[in-house]
Image (cartoon, rainbow, N blue to C red; front, side, top):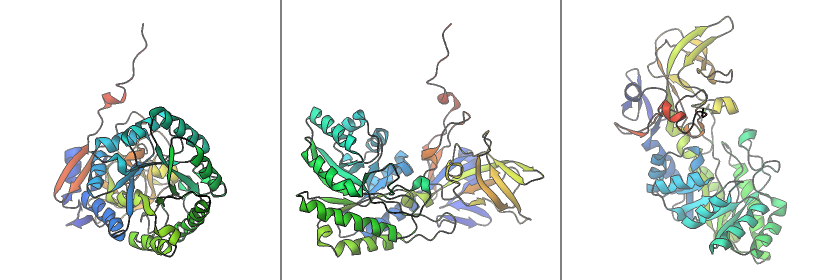
Length: 420
């Protein structure tokens, strides 16, 4: 159980708010986040970086609600974005664009123009074609675009293939072997200013060794670049630290950073560089849950189904990655449990949230799907014309609606019937 969730007299609480009170006021399904848990996770990173020139960026793609952005901006976070839309969210939340790094393999001209206009900290460039496009756009605006090349170090992060990004067969970054030549090309292009080097090897990484291996690859490149007269101002080591979904034991945030800082401190080539990170899941993943209600219990000759009102459109991770989320009753029953597949109402056999879960439940009971703060609402959709859930932030005994449930009319509000 996440430490912001507790059982009090047979009922689960989120901080000091009983989950049934949230369901009663806002309905289900609903996403629930803990302000204290988000602050605590970020504080572990920032405290481990104390006294160093470090910018800890929050990877917006994990959870881009304005309240989450605002909260982390107040705590001193920078932001890692992958689209113009995410930049607009950062601006709408009142965060500072000069603390934003713009990643992503497919930046459009209009996105580049927007980022240059607002003065983002850096563009993490992922291809030669992007370099040339950014050069043209910056020149046309009379701007100098700060760039960092994202290097693909060919390091196996040991994670699910869909969220591994640092192997040579992945679409991300420039290969380690070609990095120096691409940097030299960038140095010759007008409108660009080389400021850093970047890598990100994947997500849900549960060991320190892949991070250190990637850093070693970058250290060699920093030295090689210096020999060609290309000196850098920062070293961006990405993110990807995993969380506990099903008993995983990732290193602590402090242990992971201390291992990297020890390697940096031992190398005079690296000590002079500002260090940047891009953490997402490890800040918000364990700080959220999806609250859902059991609609039907359906026994069949093959198995038992618990059909709930949350679905794959609300939480895509199980259907997409076969990802595991713990599912627990909000008010546990002292009865014989049975094994259930917890499934939603969407018309797909892939619409499931958990398989073979031992639960003592009845129709109408509430369930909490844990560790759903990252890539839950951010990846949700309106498949089957289903409104996306509301999002609620608990803060001690208070609950704040930070996104309302979508009215069904809004789902087709931009559509029109044919004339005649």
